[in-house]
Image 1 (cartoon, rainbow over the protein chains, first blue to last red):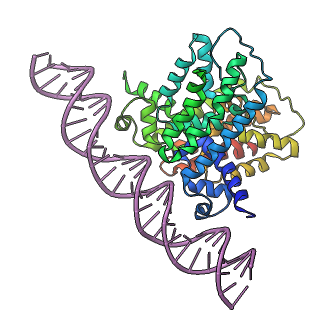
Image 2: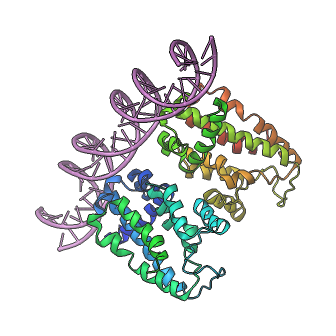
Length: 194
Length: 194
DNA sequence: CGAATTTTCGACCAATATTTTCGAAGAAAT
DNA sequence: ATTTCTTCGAAAATATTGGTCGAAAATTCG
């Protein structure tokens, strides 16, 4: 390989795809290695652990997410209107969750119910949030519906704080906690409009 | 539960969804149980093994596939025309494989190349064929393009034989072999136009 | 009701799979 | 030619998982 940073990027990209489909637990180092056509042990020269890779992936994707949001959020007008103080997260082609999304409209649930439903459904499932962030189709459509300039700002602010609970305090948080943190920031935090 | 058959159907439906996403190996009995809100051990009262469930799922889906085909195959006209002696398998919204499908048109590959590509890509991956059969979007669109009455009949005939290599001889075939058998029947067998 | 039967499930285990380490050895650099 | 950087096979350490078993819970039956 050319240099370490280059190599790490390759791993992050490749592992990200696998993680996004299978989730953290079901993704094996063997798979990651095989996808990159290298020996499994070699990965440990560039990363400390599987968690380390995962963290890098999430960090990478979170960045993309924030950048996309920052650059597009002002150009988007809400086609919904009406509902105040709520930010709606649209995830087209995001199978399961899009059902819940539809449910919100059908049943007039608010976001707190929405979150509860997600939590209930994906309890202890790191897969949920990973897919949430990584899923290709979703990524492009996440946060493309906001209903007020104020909320838009709130999202930006909140997302800018994404790194803090996830990575700065990383020594204090295990994976599950970090993932819950993401969920909180992405959903609960935003809804709170703080 | 009401009765055994009813219960088995529930398991088959639920397990099928999980299998279709994670493949045989990555799907755990715990998951299947949890999805059904029952204890893992209970499943073994209705099924002999994980393989047994898997087999039931494939059998179920293969049946759906054949039924759908049988009832719709004559109503479909080929929008493609031209290519003779080949049956094209369209799998809309079936991410990876649909790419290969497109590749066939773009690069003028025939079905033998198609199959080779699949085999190469999903070598040793039972996931491939399972997803092929189970994937919701795919199921509805599999085999909706045929280019001759003759080939249409060939498909029907071939699919009617689906059960034979898969289940009647099940004692002689392990899972991997059975899956290869499906692949053969679904693709190679059909293409052979016999 | 109470015995007999069916169904559920927690606790456990052997087998397997997976993450991570380690050292040797191949490349590359100095 | 020596040192440093990188790769990887083998294996240690650990974790997971399919499947078993007996006991409890539920249901049926007399």
